[in-house]
Length: 534
Picture 1: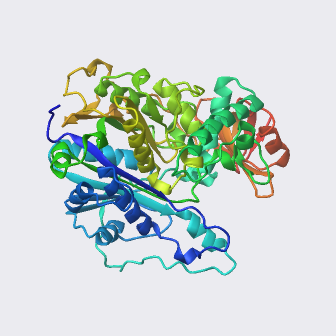
Picture 2: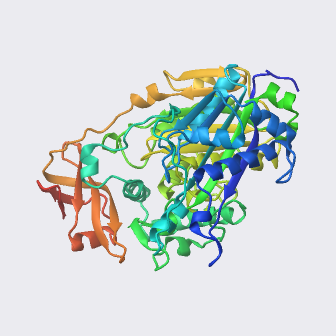
Picture 3: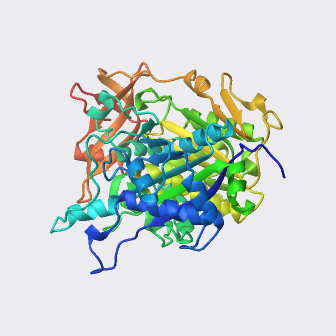
C-alpha cells in the first residue's frame, strides 16, 4: 500500500517499571532517577522498532533515534531539572535540534502526540522522540526512611538553557476555590463522584459497589500487564471498602480508588514519517498510525462549570475526533480512558457513548493510574505504549485514548489504527463537527479544536460573598489518617442559581455527608465560609 510519505507513524514504544526492591536488597540511593528511567524507556522503544529482544542490535531504531530532530519530555514531578531533555539527549548520544518540556497536566502526552503527528504530516518534522518518567516512589521512600538518605540525583547548573515549553501553564483553581480547600485533585474529583451518584439516583452503598466494580475490572487488566505497578486483581469490596491497608482518603474514595503517584515508571514513543520508517527498515507490522485527534477544555475553573456530572469538552472533542477518523465509537475495539479517579472514567465513558459496566470491552489497556501506575504527567505515554502493543496484536482494529489535565479541565483524545487514515474529506463526516471547530489535516492525520463550541455553552456564575440559604450541589469529605472525616468542601447554589464554596467541619454534619445523601440538602452559609446543614 502506498500513501503520503509524510504520514505520521508510531514505530517504537518502550516502558519501564522499577518496582521496589525486596527487603534488604539494594539501597534507595542506587535506584535510578527520572532521567535514568527516561533513557531506559527510549532504549526499549529503540529495540521495539525492530521487534528485537532487549539488548538486541535494533539497527532501524538506532538509525531513527540518531536522526531525531525533536525530543519532547513530559516534565517529571519528583525532581526539578532545568532542562531534562538535554540530559536525556546526552545520555543517548543524540543531538536533536529542538528540545521541549511539558507543563503540568495529564492531557499533555496525548496532546503532544497530536501536535507531533501534525508537524510530521506537514513535513516540519521527520523523527521525534517523546518520553517521560517519574520516581515518586523512591523520593517518598527516602523521606520516610529513618536515615533520610540523600538521593544523588542530577542537579543542572542554574545557567542551563531552558527547553521550549509545551502546554498551558495555567493554575487549576481560583483564589476562592483554594481558600475552601480545592488545592489538590484528591479534594476536587470527589465533587464529580458525589454529583454522579446523585444524578444516577443510586444509594451511597449502591454507588460504592458501582465504582468498586469498575475499578476491580481495571485491576484485572493490570494483572495481565507486565509493566503495571500493582499486578494483583482486586474484588469490588477490596477496592471500595475502607480498611487499615486501604484507608479512606476523601469520600467516597479509598486509597485504591485514587491515582497511584508513588511509582517509579518511564515510557517513550518514537514517532516519525512513513518515509523515515521505510528508509530505516522498520517492519510494517510495527507501524501504528495516529488517525485523528482533538484537544479542548471545559470551562476552566470549577466555579464556572454548568454541573459536576458531565464534560461538554469530552463530548465535543470525542465526536470531532471520531468524525475526522470516519468511524463511530462502536467501531473502536480498544480503549484507554484517563483514570485518575473513577469519576473521570464514568464521565468520559458517558460523553463518548460507552457503557462503564461492559465487561467485554475494558476501558483501559494498562489497568489505569491506580493499578497500572500514575507516574505524574506521563501516564498518557504509557497508555499509548500499551495501546500500540494491543493494536499490533489485533491487526485492523482501532484504539482510542484520552488524556485529562487538572480538575477535568483539559482534554486530549487520540484515535489510532494499524492502517493509514483517511485523506481529508474522504469518508470523514464534517457535518458531525460542532460549529466553529478548527480542523487541521496533514499526512493522513486530522486534528480538531472544538473550543469555540464549548465556550458558547452555559456556565455558572460564582458568588464569593454569598450568605444565607443555599442548596448543597455536591461535596467532598477529606479524612485524617486516623480514619475520621475532618473537613468537607461543599459546592452550594444560592437561590439565584449562583455557585458558592463552603466548608463543613462540624463532626455531626460531616457524619451525615458520608452516611446519607448530601446533594440537594438545604443549608445556611455563614460569613466565615462554613455551612450549617439542615
